[in-house]
Image 1 (cartoon, rainbow, N blue to C red):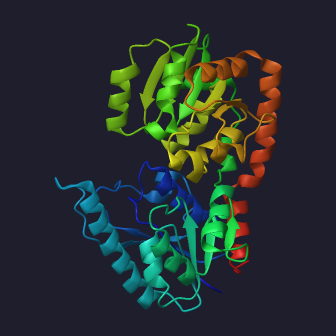
Image 2: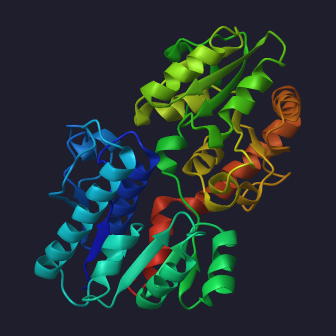
Image 3: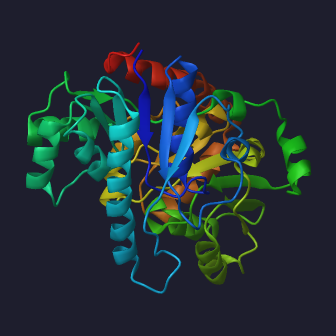
Length: 380
């Protein structure tokens, strides 16, 4: 039996989606009977809590914290601190694997440098591509030749891998991101959820859950909120302290906007169940949103069985369409406002599309995702 070493460079645990992605992936691989070791840096700023409790996941995989040079808490440029951390972590991973991994084990990561080092010793390497190296094609082509397998999270990246690097289906596997069905498909009536969260019963409630990065399109959603009737309330759940402060300074004066900040992950399903509509307003102005992403939030929304209003952009419409959502022009507050009103006021159509999305979400569970990836990698 091969072991699977899952390499992740970010803070762990943390409020970041990438950290959650690593945790859920490790849990799902281990559920398939694969001995899974999650390898992460010993960052000073990581949350000092039990990761299994933090994410409400099974303690079925091992977590190994490796030493790094961590300058993130010092008043130094973030780019410098990142590269010092990334290079030192990559070296720590290499030596750890040399002593702890076996030749036949699978080395799996969405971190290019530690995986690249691993290719010099271990033949079974798998890179999960979250972005696309538009500015480093020549260097990345060497990495493509050395790495055995790739998992990409949307069709655009799969096509680019073939067009740019000549990597076909035997090397590149398309697998979207996923959702924990059991945590988001909860039994909760809309009004009961609102009472528990202290939200108004008499409003049409529009909910966004996630970070407040500009490429997420949250400013467009805030602008759309200002165009809605006064019986609407748009609730923003999530964001770092810095982003929440920025957002409040810009938009908190509008009575149609409620910025509640970061909430525990285990509470997010209830916020989504409280909604009349869930919004995914990604921008078309940045490549990370337009081409690269496969939002976990999208699958969480689908599982929540609530109408979804989303930007009509390439990365989103691989999953959403006019049968399972209300698609709107990206970066257009007026069209987003119209989409929100359609989702909240056309109840029969909204129920039909929400049900269709809910049914479709089942094939995107973490365990089904892990099973398909392991089959592609020859471990299942």
